[in-house]
Image (cartoon, helix red, strand yellow):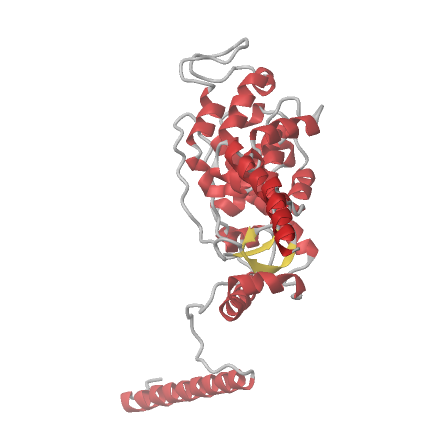
Length: 367
């Protein structure tokens, strides 16, 4: 059967129009359904206006992966012991509301965990230490602790508003009366993530970290927790714990290498004279002078005999790090002035022999 061209063209045109009309009807119906659901944009891929609250595992940064993969068997001390020390008021304290740092006014929470730090590069300066550093942002640390990033933004915004309204001093006066921003469990998770970061970076500062005793590992981890990035400026201290008392002078003990620490980890951690030298470098620092109570307890942990006699170890460090006021003694000149002042007050109303004679003569003339 042959179909003429005009009729074929008409049939094709009619089919095309029917399909187009059907397509428009479907599109209109779909758009109507979307509007009913509260959507106002047309279908199609668009860029998100804000990061997702719960990133997928593939979006985890190197720092977050290292924090999450930490194994407590990597250290000789119990993480809970260090966390308990840091919660102590003599160290970082424990505040569940965002509060300003007393010096920098930076937002802190829990045991002094920062809330608004950006991620930073921390290059490894020691060519003999292959262990890297991690300096995650506050958001990354929050993510590693398993907390919601939206909560972090809300807490930081509220903190900034309060700081603008009250100033740093006023804020710190009120901070203990404010309602908590996080729960105690949240603060524990943040503290644990921060302690893991400190341990990780402690290995970057000390090549022989794994050879240290439990108390020495805890002490170095505390130093990193408290000083963070700034510990790299303690050149003498870092040189000692990595290279020995002096370049070219080996630490006593079998397996020692010239210009370096003893090859035996047990020998290194038990070398009392060496660690006293290390302690002295820290007691002479501005950090130790500014935070004496905290510094005494941390520096004492470097003592090889700390486990057997912690009080005695702290006493030895305290003797090296006396408060400035205890060194002041009254001079002989000051003592003389005090004695003269006291004598003047006591003799002010005392009659002298000459004064007595004048008084007697005046009485006789009056008579």
